[in-house]
Length: 252
Ligand code: PEP
Image (cartoon, rainbow, N blue to C red; front, side):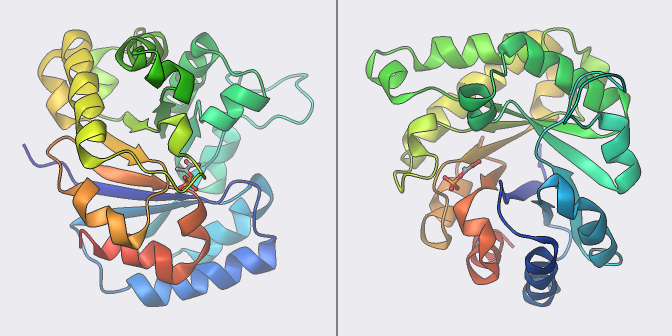
């Protein structure tokens, strides 16, 4: 089963509209020759989604959002819903990023509701899971990741499973410069695929599982060569066109 490699750049709370448009211009130039083998997405902050959507027209990059609310509309000051993101041109929405879990109280159950809202709106969720350093050192990695995956995806039927993207992001590797070894990452990715098989049967083979955590041009090829690593969710290195393009080209 070949799964199309998927590299997504999470800009987090970085880039004003003008800075984001400048980055997209550079990315379009640097990545114009990358064809079907790799799917590429950028996830700007909400404020830049609409202009970036326009700037991506007729390119080989697609748009993602970094979060959404699970309700479609209502009295939720400061929140943005999945149908709103769909209308602005998003194809993907990141849900359950560890920074959301750590700083904004996102729970496993809430992440599941967000994933369902994204699917209902006609987009694909990028569902983030991953253990903290204390959990890894306590030998709890696989248990923690299992609980996150089951809570987030347990209510999603197999027929929709193919539209879901997982991102395994060990919290201790995010923004720290510490990357999981390709062996550590592959072990968890294979475990996650096993869980998906329990949930969705053969559909599990079609689901893409990204790795995230200090992915850089110089470690991307090794990580992406693992059998169950189907792409990368990139934070810091997605803010510089040359670095992000270098990661994409590790697979292209
Ligand atoms: C992330 O925030 O999803 C991430 C992986 O960040 P970084 O690449 O900076 O570690």
